[in-house]
Image 1 (cartoon, rainbow, N blue to C red):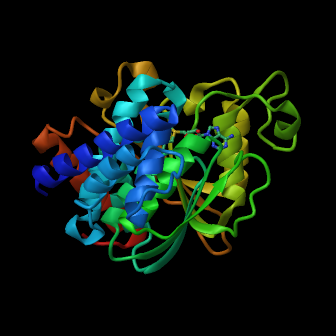
Image 2 (image 1 turned 30 degrees about the horizontal axis):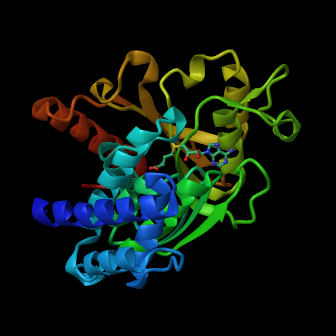
Length: 332
Ligand code: SAM
């Protein structure tokens, strides 16, 4: 991939977002969602802005045609602009999923769903869509219909514009994912879960994983909701805190999982990706029970090294390949 197209595209996103931010007196992220839509339609959709700004916007938009760029170039340039906007307004639970995580998750999905060319995929905390699009851009040999849900309107608008620009078929729902979801069970649920307490105790009380006292953990309720929206035999790939099974609610989670799913693996992401050990995360891979399906003899338990450590990365990847050959009869 060349860097020049990413830089050029970033400038188109950035400069046009700034023009719209000034004209509409909104945040940079809202303006970026608007400009993403304009770029996709090839015109200025906001009628209220001055003629001069419309002309300046159109000059930039004319430099863009969808077929001039690869999907990954569009994703990366858009991601850079989103990162710039997120610096303005930091919300720890709304951060985009980093590329390295998305790429590794796409590798795992590819392995676990080997032989399935058609997939439906749900991300119930889709945010900006960065995780979802990294996966879709890497799993090009599959035909994936995706569903994205998020409660945050700004983020889901960014995701919507991103899907159009990268030409991905995604059905979006702007709602609380812990309320009823009108989405058919999916083959795969993938999600970088929001971590913390869920404020709606009444709704939480409908879940088996509700806490007996005080607020419940949103991430536990998300796991339950996701499993309920998974086909039998389907897989989940959750980005979870390393200490998921160490909290005071962990016994309930363990019991729930025993009843509904087989733990396939827990892959610790490189510690170097996180500010400190407390914020470090893992990928939790589950398979929903289905008649005739057995639990793996051993779950895939690995800790990924710094990806710059080529020798250790290779040895861990070999270990993962061996696991797939033994447990899933999937070769390289
Ligand atoms: N994977 C996303 C990306 O690449 O942009 C980032 C996900 S971020 C870590 C968690 C997301 O969960 C945020 O976008 C937040 O708005 C969303 N969220 C938090 N609580 C939610 C809820 N109850 N229902 C739906 N979405 C929720």
